[in-house]
Length: 285
Image 1 (cartoon, one colour):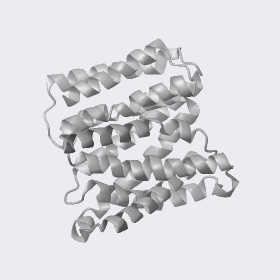
Image 2 (cartoon, one colour):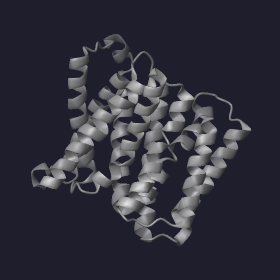
Image 3 (cartoon, one colour):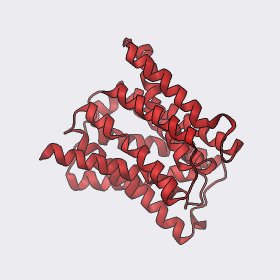
Image 4 (cartoon, one colour):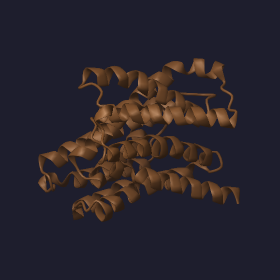
């Protein structure tokens, strides 16, 4: 029963993540400013969660990992900026499929950083997923031409920084996932405040009612609540099963993009997306 509940909770959290792009589209803020408010709202909600749950922090472990927490938090903030920019330049499906090249990047870098031997299977997965990314870009057959290509490149940039967060987390020890993420949110805020101040400033008061509603949903629900669901379910699931269930996110994002938002997706992008996700999942099995 506990395992089944964890599976349902993780699947639900990944499905919620998959709807993120549709809500971001309704927030008329620059990507950096939106990322900042997302981190602030999520940090506030997690603070309340820790108070209610009576959570205790291992301050010794936090101090030992503080540099990595700051570095990974900064990478998380940049990752969000690039992903939100990707949503603005291309379809949600193309942006998300590009973003999910991150596991492939992690697989390629682990042998270098952790001296892990890359197996033949992993090499095949990397090459075929890379070929899938070539198909996603459409090689000149994109709906919006240069705009779509720009969006996909932003998505790939977000994937690089997400991979950086994953790899930096591998170096951390003694800090639970949710507490680690909370301090990464705080680090993101520290990085994003000067970035936003130097790049157009703050425009929160200019948001419409619809913009406010979507911002609160993105910050509190899509980030704060969903991260709580995600990390509370992880502790009861095998790592492999959790990795495979995480691919519900891009599948839902593609469905939302095509069915809800009415965005186009080409046959080559569908084929490329299946290759990226399929070989990434195979790599996890």
